[in-house]
Amino acid sequence: MWHCDNGFCNKVFRPTTNISMYTSMSRCKLLCSGPQLWPQPIGYTYFSKTIVSLSISKLEYKFQSIPSDSVNQYLAEAFKLFLKDLARLEKIDTKSREPLKEPVNKMIIQLDIESDSDPRLRTNTDEAYVVKIDTEKHQVFIKISAVSFCGVRHGLETLSQLILLDQSTGTLITLSHAVIKDAPSYKYRGVMIDTGRNYIPVIDLMRTLDGMAMCKLNTFHWRISDVTSFPLKLSKTPELFEHGGYERSMVYTREDVKAVVKRAGIRGIRVLIEVALPGPVGRPWSWMTDTSCPTKTENFTCNNPLCLRLLMTESIFDVIQNIYAEIIELTNVDDIFHLSDGIFSLMRCNHLIEDRDGYLDKALFRLRMANKGFMPKLPIIWYSPHLSRDFEAKVWEKFGVQLLDWTQNPSEFYLSQFKVIHSTKWDLSCEMKKQRCTRYRTWQEMYSWKSWRNIEVFTIEGGETVLWTDVVDTGNIDEHLWPRAAAVAERLWSDMVANSSATKFVYLRLDTHRWRMLLRGVKVKPIWPAWCSFNPGICLERIP
Image 1 (cartoon, rainbow, N blue to C red):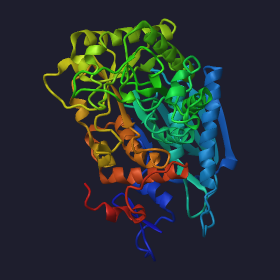
Image 2: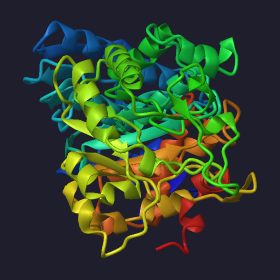
Image 3: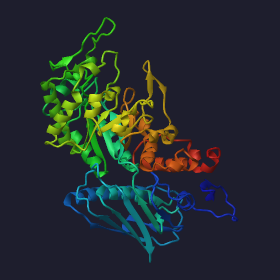
Image 4: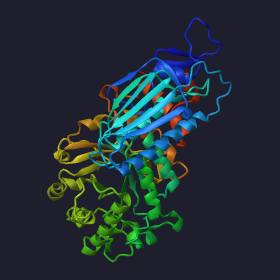
């Protein structure tokens, strides 16, 4: 049985009768520790201290207010996923079940989307939601309401975390009464995966989307190409994948991209595809005559095809416009766009600042043309020092920059002109030296990083974990992503100043969430030995 001790549930063998006990870990967690929600809601919450039993076989649901047919289609698919998760819980074989001493209540779920007729995640989408649970006469009434589809989807995710399996009886349980009013702290909450250095199969990307949805992350930043490969089959520029694919089995087709976009959309996630431009662009662009690989001095050479970069010619920008147009068509995301533009070091031969004057101005013009004459509300590039130059800073003023490697310098005041996406301390990759991993950042470090709030910027749009795949592929992508990306997800959703470190209750909630993610097929690394999951109070004695 289970005993509640200072907010922690500990397993007790041969329990005595003079202390209160719970027959299952789930019952104890709901009443002792409280619902183990991830990310933590930041609005008003109320939870009762009584438990009711439920069953999918006694379920009714109603889509109360649906503003469009497309929203109805998205919501129907999202609700199927919710029911699938509950069914998965009910199918768990719990040995030595005890007879159920309380009635199984009828569950009535009502979903209400108030006004947003576009199911896609947009830059102005309201993701707030409200979940209410009330019980009366053996009926559990559950209402989820939001302005948008994305809000209701988040509410369904929260509800799925409120409904647990009672291991002692094999039935579903939840609290008899609850209220959660919740909304994210930041609009942009992303995960970037680089598929240019190592190819990541579509099935792994799909599973990543499932994990993101469980953590309420909303942007899958797909850096699809790099100097080493271009594994995307575009209809207007097939030469790029023909010269840039490692082999034909390591290429994403248009159908692959559309499948990823569809899966993401149902989970309230947008897909941003980034093509690494303007250079270095490497071998994938070697078919074009307007590429360059200059020799500066005897000690500053470039004889490696990976160092190829693009010249600032109209023919190059014609190709770039075609790429932009096809990306917008495939992703159906036209209000935010990642133009890359980063200057990443490779063999000292790719210092491009002096050879790429005017790139941003021309790229923005071509992006507008590719987007049917409209400028996306939030164009994004990687931050690099060239943005300190007056002309390019002015061109990019009040647009988005993503900070990857930032050392705060008071003299560099120009960040105040930009909308910023933070990634500096949220790099999931190993720090590589001489082809060896020299440093691996922990989830506790990522969860506790809060100095990003102190950088003076125009606005903080949010943040993003980034995963470069130098030593990552299908064999280890999940262990690099999870649970560290989940830790960042809570920082971006909740961002609680008063609770910005990994306290013992953060450990407890993250461990519970890890088991949920495992049950849904996401391979999450453990945060401690399994013994601590059953005896958390003892394991966490020394943590504040």
